Image (cartoon, rainbow, N blue to C red):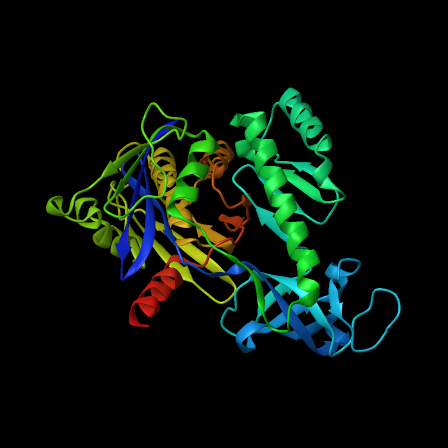
Length: 402
C-alpha cells in the first residue's frame, strides 16, 4: 500500500535534521552533518599487525584508532607508501593505506575501516569489486537485464563494480548513466590522487543533505506524494509539476517552527521512551543491551472476549506495526529479540511472521525476520547504516555547544 509522506527539515538542538512522517506517523529521524565519519575516506598508517586476530590497528586522521580486518581486505589493500617490501599482498607496520570508515566506534569497540571503497548515489553504488550487482528488491527480470546492459556499456566502468539499487527500477536510464559515470570518475580520481596525500588526512568526507535525502525518497517509488515542510533555505527548487517529484512548503517565521507544528520534540520523547503504549491499551518495553535489543509485548490485560488466541493475534499485529516503526525511528540494528504475547496456533504465529516481513520489506536498512524460537521469541536482525537516534541527538547537542 502506497502512503503519503511528509518530510520536516528544521534546526533541532542547533543542527539541521530531517524527520520523515508516513501517513502522519513519525518513522525516521536523520541528522545532517557537514562531515560525517562513516563513509568517509582517509589515509591511515598501520600501527600494529595482530596475527592472532588476522587484523591490524591503524591510525587515521585526528588520532582516530581504526580496526582493519586483513582477510576481508586481502587483494584490495591500497598501499600508498610502504615501509618495507613484504612481498605479495601483505602489509606491515608503518605502511600508509587508503581506507574507508565502515562503522563508528561503539562503547569498547574501535571504529572499523576497509579497503573496499565505495561511493553511493540514490540509484547506484560504485565499488572496487569489478562486478555488476542488482538489488534483490528489483523483481522484474526484464528491467534487470536492461539495467545490466546499460552499465556494461559504460566505458568509464574500467574494472570498477556497480550495484544497482532498488530506486533504479523507477529511474530514467539517462539519469542512471549520468549518476554512475559521475561516481565512477570521482572514485577513480580519489584513488589516483591519494598517492601524494600526506598521512592521516581526509580524502573524502561523506555528507548527506536534506535535498539528497528527499530525492532518494522520491526515487524509491513508495509514496503517493511527498511534501517537504521547512523554514530553512532549500538548494533546489521543487514544485508538484516539476521532475523533482515533491512539493516544497516553505514555512514563514510568523507561522512558527515546523518542529512545533508537527509536535516533533514530544514525538521524539515518546519514541525514545523505554515504555511505549499501544492504542489498544497494551504496551512495549524496549531494552537495548550490549549484545542485542530486547522488546517485550504486554497486553495490558486487554485481551477481550474474542478469546485469548484471536485477542493475542490482534494485539501482536498492532505491536508488530509499532515495532517496525520504532526500528526505523531509533535506528536499532544488530540482533533483535521480541517476546510477543503467546499464541498456541501455528497459523497465528505464521501470520505474525508474514506481517512482520511485510512491514519491514521497505525498510532502507536490510531487515531479516528469522523465525520464532521454541520459547516463542521472534528473532530478527537489522543492518546498521546510521548511528542510533539517541546518539544522533547527542551529536546534535554537541555540535550546538561547539
